[in-house]
Length: 340
Image (cartoon, rainbow, N blue to C red; front, side, top):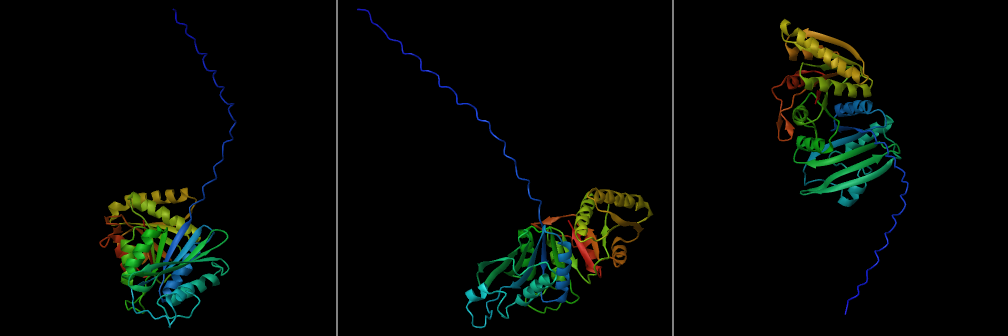
């Protein structure tokens, strides 16, 4: 008996759904990077002068300010009988004799007087416990409707320079400002001595402006050499100087007559780089002599002497104790920026 087989009909092919016309989403333009400044303050008048200059550099809505007071770990803090939780919640309102409070309050009042901070801005409080210290790390963040922020930070650390360097590294600030007084005597637990200011400038990986006898409106004297890093640093300072409408002057020092050609070439290269970003160079000089003494003497008539440092790292900090930059910082009578 013959077998009969039945063939299955092939399954009907499913029709592909009609292609939808998709509208390409437009990407939102990326927000321009904000310019952040860390101002290290203590109880001195010099630190308030540094803050004033920071306000000038930070003019515009794209800049943020952080005021930092660092105090060593202290288990003997007095809170006037108030509980620590109450102290934290009313950090800037209570008249408490806590280390750093007076400096932060004066800084806040100065910013209000200068029109850089409005008391009606949105306020947020942050706290981090620190072992061995009853008050811990505290910060008050003020935010404006335009996106600008002001942070008042009361930081506890094993030492003042350690706390400043750590905060500067973690915050990745565009500029760190620290005042340099004329005395090594400590007036309080968070006092910034000249040795501390020098150490921060020596070890921080970014640009540091050490303010001393700061007189505004005299311009920045930018010292350049033939090294590419020096030219880049000159351009970076020109961007900062342009923020505060400070004129830029260029200087290169040749050790002898035979090095004049190289020094002139360095000034020309720096000028080209600076003019590329739309900043005008107000003057330029090429001199012969000892680089350190010539820079220090020539720089007296300017608000800021700008020197660059070619980086040699030890861990994440810089070492340049034998460089021209550090010698200028040590001998100059006015403000010095170590640009990187």
